[in-house]
Image 1 (tube, one colour):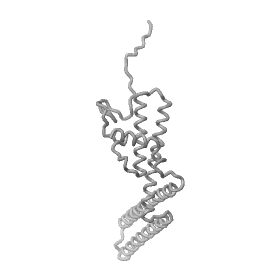
Image 2 (image 1 turned 180 degrees about the vertical axis):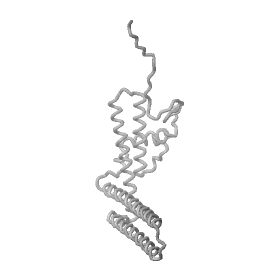
Image 3 (image 1 turned 180 degrees about the horizontal axis):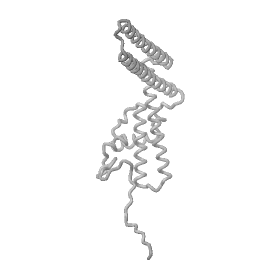
Image 4 (image 1 turned 60 degrees about the vertical axis):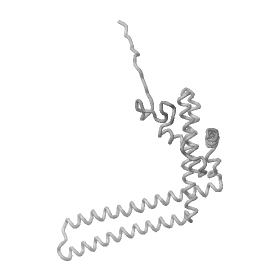
Length: 221
């Protein structure tokens, strides 16, 4: 008896995170959902010439072009690959723009890379001193208890726990401060570099995609 293979079934791969009846970026009437407006940056002000805002507008346009191609011509993998590369470049440009804008604010208030390094070293010294002081206070307290005959194993255990968590708190505070100063220095380096190699200019951050958005909004408005 011949074997019959049935193919009466439907396979749907969809999009990761997609739910039936829920549209991610567009409503049924073609208008954008809240996620779509955020993804495409339609609410961003084109008159805001900050590098970060321009980079976000460019990223939104890159996403819009990619989504349009994937919806209307999904078999053109070469074109989709190009648009995906454009999205990645736009995301990197946004991160760079954020650093440059942050660096310009820091530089305007007088921050320098050298000064931040000095502050970080001082914070580390303060953390070490505080840790040593805590240990010394605990040792003195234990000594007083021992001299009066009140010292017990419970006192030792409590002191060890307190010392452990106090030192962890000092270390965490320093690490958080050090991370912030490292981020500040990265922003200052990006800002300093932008003044010489052009990475901070509106033209290079925005690119053609930004210009297309501006032109389209002018036509629509």
